[in-house]
Amino acid sequence: MSTTLVDSPAPPRQEIRHKRRPPYLPWLLLSATMILLGVLTGYPVLRLVVMSFQEYERAQLMGQPAEWVGLGNYAEVLTDVEGFWIVLGRSFLLMVFLVVTTLVLGMLVALLMMRVNKALRLLVSVGLLLAWAMPALSATTVWGWVFDTQYGVVNNLLTRITGDDWFGHSWLLNPLSFFLILSFIVVWGAVPFVAFTLYAGLTQIPEEVMEAAQLDGASAFQRFRLIQVPYVRSIITVLVVLSMIWDLKLFTQVFVLQDIGGDRELTNTIGVYIYQTGMAQGHYGLASAVGVIFVAVMLAIAYPYVRRTLREEEL
Amino acid sequence: MIKVRRRLADTGFGALAVAVFVFSAFPVYWMVNTSFLPNNKIRGRDLAFFPTPDVFTLNNYRSAMFGEARAPFPPAVLNSIGVTFLTLVIALLVGFVAALALTRFQFKGRRTFIVLILVVQMIPGEAMIISVFRIIDGWQLLNTIIGLTLVYAAGVLPFTIWTLRGFVNGVPKELEEAAMIDGCSRAGAFWRVTFPLLAPGLVATGVFAFLQAWNEFVTALVVMQRPEAMTLPLWLRTFLQATQATNWGAVMAGSVLIAIPAVIFFLIVQGRMTGGLVSGAVKG
Image (tube, rainbow over all chains, first blue to last red):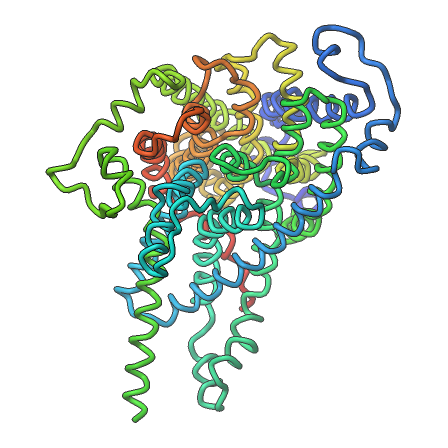
């Protein structure tokens, strides 16, 4: 911008305006942002890192000075004293399962929307929008009620269909079926965004391309694999990264489902683990170390997305 | 023969579409249905699929709002509305001027600032609860609307700036320049030409901030622990912690109360949610 101005003299009037603009004006406009983010994002990050190197327990909360313990908290966390690795592994496994399920189902729904007529497409869209709009907390309580041990509609229907007595069957006590229900809730809420985005991408593929392939004898699956997927590949990449971030951060659904009736010890994911270690048990230093590790993991996962976005924006 | 097969396939896919609709919409329907049923129907062995006039009741809402066993409802509503409204106003005001600086000015450090805004969005709030708790506690702002609002505003600000930046970029600079040639001042040109064109962007971004603050759970859990300081999500959670059997009718009524504003505002802007990701992302 400035170089072109030097090369080809602009009309004098514009030049004057450019010179008159004070150089500090943009920073003035950014000052409120810098204060807010500095004090409420930058400082907490710094504070988290500092606390992760300190012995910080309930006593320190009361005003006792915090002692420096170097890498002591990290050593304690990483040597599995508090079950950190199990929680981390569980969170990752769950994340992978959720991402794959969400993406596959989302793609299938998107393809279905391409295939059916306008009225049915509207019907599907209305359903998806309802699921998407539901706050995570409301969704979790409703699914908890649907799978309720005593009066839930699932146990009721299962009793009618199978003839066995399902009343009193707890879905949340067993960790494996706890995660099944959790996956139901998360996937149910996440598929709409994925399906709508993929559908929007698929509709942008020129019709001639698909028709030509059909005339050349490509089967529906071949058209999907060789034309549709490559066309929306970059969308899929973004969806995968975003889903990974969201599914690893999972908190509300896990926490509230545990309230309704899960075994906290056996179903903690990383966010809930930080809350339990820090807020519930008062090991603020340990929880901070886990928090720092969590932030690092998230930034590593987000790195390709950040790079791609910046490249696309052509700053 | 081909026609018959084609029709069979149509029917099959049609049935699938209906199944997707039923599965997606069922929990929402079931929530509303249960919230209007009396307890003996909720706990009955015969499933009640519709609150027919002979059983229809508002008792669950009454119990949710005025029941004794839980955190009080009126302060929760006021807290939620207060925090959400303030978050929205701060995020829009601060985010808007920041977006202006990042789009309409060329200055050193601009690129770095934009990268930072993007990276900050990737820091999970769930990891920060410990230090946020300590800091808010240190400022004596635990259990106050101001404390929670500050955390929320900082949380939604990066996304607000990022999105508004896109909207401001979408309005050509030439429009402003034309107005300036016609005698407008720089600020006047912006105010009269660009700003009105940004209204839809401000609405969309504002709704996002609204939804974030209205639905947020984990930070509120840490910062607002006293019953009278709770926001609506925390208030609903107290229903589930009760030692006696869960009163599902009241829980569903509470869920409906929280979901209604969220669903309405969401439907206003849903068209914009996927657009940004797709435009320019499809290789043509």
